[in-house]
Amino acid sequence: MVVNCIFCDILSGKRNAHILYEDDDHIAFLDRYPIDIGHSLVVPKEHHEKITDMNPNNVGELFSVIPKVASAILSATGADAFSLGQNNGRAAKQIIPHVHVHIIPRYNHKGTIWTKRAISNDGELSTLAEKIRKFI
Image (cartoon, rainbow, N blue to C red):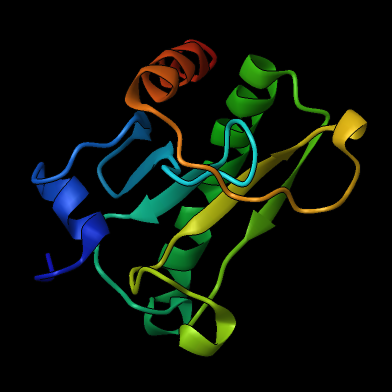
């Protein structure tokens, strides 16, 4: 765990998160500032700032979690598709310096433009997380 890392704080229990999935090496939770309903993050428990800092096998294991979580998000939200995002470094707009993969549900009726991020309330996130967990 790294001091002043929001994701490490979630992993240590210092911060709350709306957890969707967890195994020995990874955790998935809802983004508090979603681009769209169901926007989630898949995070390795071991702290690395950039994906290039990780062992290639661990990168593969991280990405192997995504289909399970993405499928549950699609089922729970009725999304038509999803985008993946993975930023490395400040110039790439990585806000939290801990490797993470964004799963962003996409909806045909909204088109392909990125929506403005909104702050979700805990009640909405709790209800959505419970709904998604039922599909995992």
